[in-house]
Length: 191
Picture 1 (cartoon, rainbow, N blue to C red):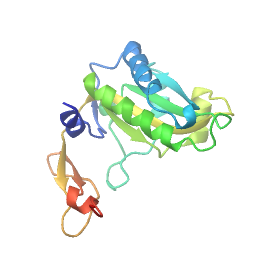
Picture 2 (cartoon, rainbow, N blue to C red):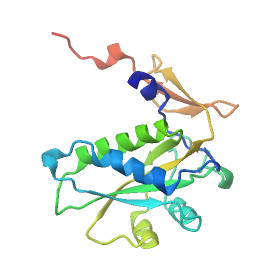
Picture 3 (cartoon, helix red, strand yellow):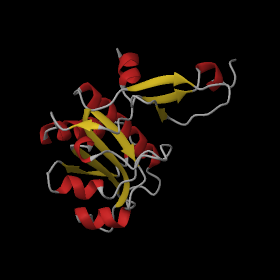
Picture 4 (cartoon, rainbow, N blue to C red):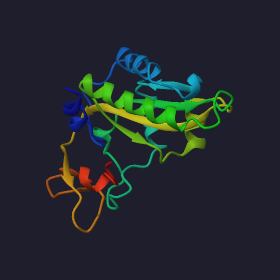
């Protein structure tokens, strides 16, 4: 059921090294992304699929992880993603691709969960370095990096407390907690 898929689809920041997504898995996620709606049907997105063992650490070095976890610099070598999808946009096709990016990214994350993989969307990117590492054409904008792999951590949902703090956190056992606002807090009005 779709609600169950949404409940178990979280941002994973630590991964097991096996099994890793295959290139066919990554291509199947692009098949899903290409079917998502596109504003004005402009279809401005392009994708770079990364699974190569030499390229993985190069991409990793361009990313910043988990801003709310001040004492954590990111996954250890044995916890790093085993694949990436870099989402690019072509400004000649759309000057405002935000809707397309969000729809495609969510579709990729949900598709990954269906395949048994976890994902994390990253926008804290050293874009100039990533452009160099992957030889990305200058006319394409780097929008997001989707980190992928077999989840290597437990992520639990909690309810935002009375203090309104939405920052995620980890307990002393490494369980990652993500506060979510309640439905009633989100509904401004019913008519």
